[in-house]
Image 1 (spheres, rainbow, N blue to C red):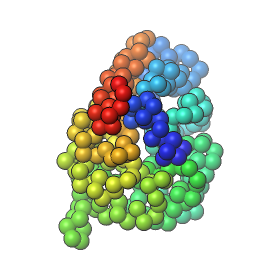
Image 2: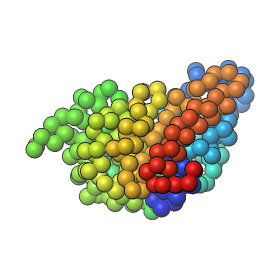
Image 3: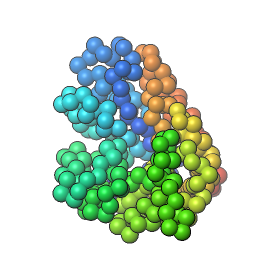
Image 4: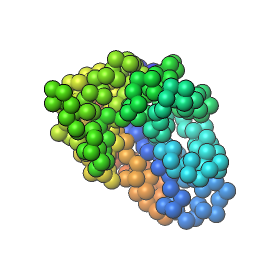
Length: 275
């Protein structure tokens, strides 16, 4: 999916919501467990309930590969079910030497047809470049993540007192354009968004940490949004596990609608849109 198409979807739906499909067998409603593929049936119900409210879905690959071949089959069926106009993110956090990254890129882009993949930058340019070779596909590079451990390395000061995440971003922007490269910026660091937006004024950010992790949507939108929105805000557990009974999909929709409504208000105010 091109940047233009993604921005168009955001304006059309008045939403920059990404829903994380971190589907855990131990947490899905028990009435689904008797079905042949409970993971897929859960995802299908979530997609049916929320596809008009979000612009992206982000399956976390660990929840599928942990189940072996059945998990991969559930993931492939889920991808086939997601509407074509919705951006898909393989939250795989891959990144290895060049020939290995090339195989990861083939797996997620050529075989599974994801629009994007999250990539760890620690091994440098040659580990990222193979993903960037694919047309109209996106690399979403880990920069400043939302977890507690992000403080261990990402905030470590380098030369000129630059934190490591800034060095990563500045270096990575030499590898790919804002038409193919995004950055993961956690919502749990709202005080950093104004500075980070100056580093990468035209790039999209994938922002986890809103919802269950406590990130504040209004704060990150105020300082992180650019003239083309430039943000996909993810919520996983806060939406898909909003309910655990037979009406779980309706409760997921309510949770997604709450976030989407807030996003619509932000977009209407910032871009003077018709409500």
